[in-house]
Image (cartoon, rainbow, N blue to C red; front, side):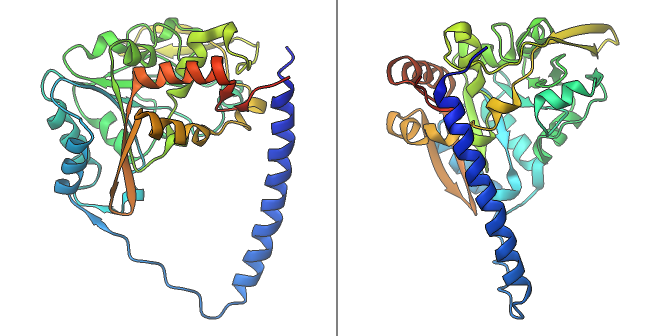
Length: 305
């Protein structure tokens, strides 16, 4: 299916910029290799629980909340207590009635080539490639993990199973019965620890919800059928579409940053060497639809042609 003309124009521009960047980096590397007095690396900040607790409190994470956590904790500096300290702090903030979701994807490449490799997926053994915090979460008791070969979610809380139970029935990872949809439907929040908008997959929920009304065709037409195994050892054949690598190349979630900050959808606080942010999931979904429908603005650039 033909894409809008703006998609092809943006792809050509990004390809040219990327090529220039590669040439420039090689030149700079050659110059720096001849430098006999390289600059010493700046010492990383030490970040303790009080600073993280204060940031989460100021951003509004509180008892009873539903929150999805995206993280790159090393970007904050040296976190005292490591991922365990952050994991326990988040659970403490939301309390016994709150719910915490972690994206625990078993791959760190593009979705399409990963599915082309015909992987198998077992919720009991599949790794996560989403950072140290998610690795700790997977080893922690009490979680419920969704059966999905690429965009699996791990949930904690009294109704954790309800958020993940139907993910294997979704033809696209962010469809109506997915954990990402339920995060929006139940007025959840998105906590960003050391990562920016580019490290957040929930943008795709709006695309899946709009479906044919979204101006960019983000999925390839091929349907992958992947063998998956649930927590009880039952086998499922999960059908899923894959994001088109051509379209993924032009994606830039930071195109939304100014609008998110201006509207209050995103709030941020500096912690250590990085930033901790909070997003209102439902407000983000509404804003993304408004920007797309009324201003033709998407994370794939402004749409025309």
